[in-house]
Length: 100
Image 1 (cartoon, rainbow, N blue to C red):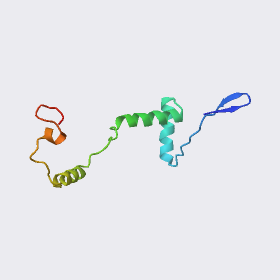
Image 2: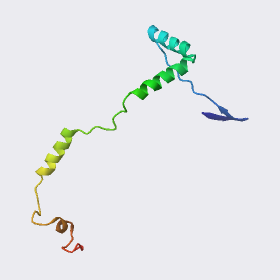
Image 3: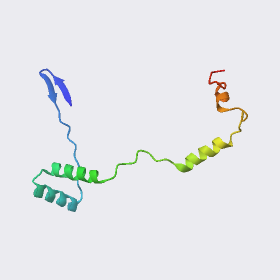
Image 4: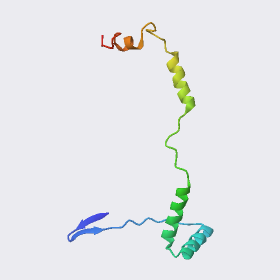
């Protein structure tokens, strides 16, 4: 984030913290950082990214087949009109494909 002052712009870095309250988790993180030679922040970031990469992608959306079947049943329950007409006649075309 940048803010302006009399001398131009100053860049402010947002600091976000994570509080680890579990002693075993803290120990594992510190051991990971020590063994990899990384900072704790970088070690946690890489570990989290690697785990996310192994997980399947979240579903984009689920189709509720029960709901689909309910909708289709409702559509099929509507009265049928103009059953004696062809599809073209219903939308207004004659036998030559010309709008009538």
